[in-house]
Image (cartoon, rainbow, N blue to C red; front, side, top):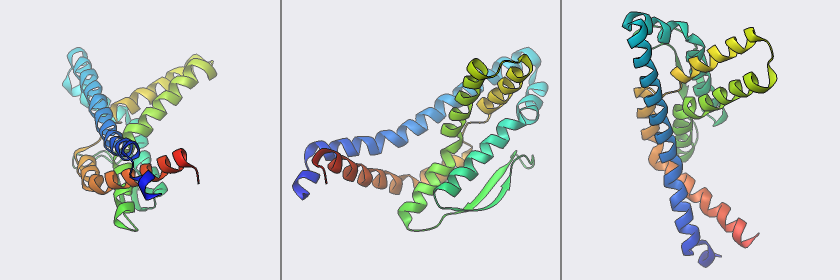
Length: 195
């Protein structure tokens, strides 16, 4: 069993997945941030910086709420204790926040940090896709299409990771990578060699 587990293909594939998975999360966050900044520049060029600030930070509050719901949901689902949630409370440079306490062994705490801090990226993408799907296939009324489009656009503007999100993400990253590597090794072993 140990020989098979340590075979080159299982170790290499697990290592590759352990590095690519978090790198893809970071890359997706960077791309989304770039798109958001590009859209903000276009809106600023057309409408001016004052209106753009109000539009992105206040009129697109559903995106802020979904951003915070994403953090809280993943913190809870990974076992952290969510202690406080402010879905939309603009003050001191933030529009909302989620406080949570990590629990369990260090590896579980790392998973909680990484998954909760990056949740707006991947859950935000899921929300945007869901709204797009609803607009194009389910919803028939123009009014509802506009509402869902507005919510999707507001999510696009708020599915980025904040500076604090990145700090939390990188704090949990080393143990998260080790966890992903170990889980990948076990899954690949049982997939390849059976029980």
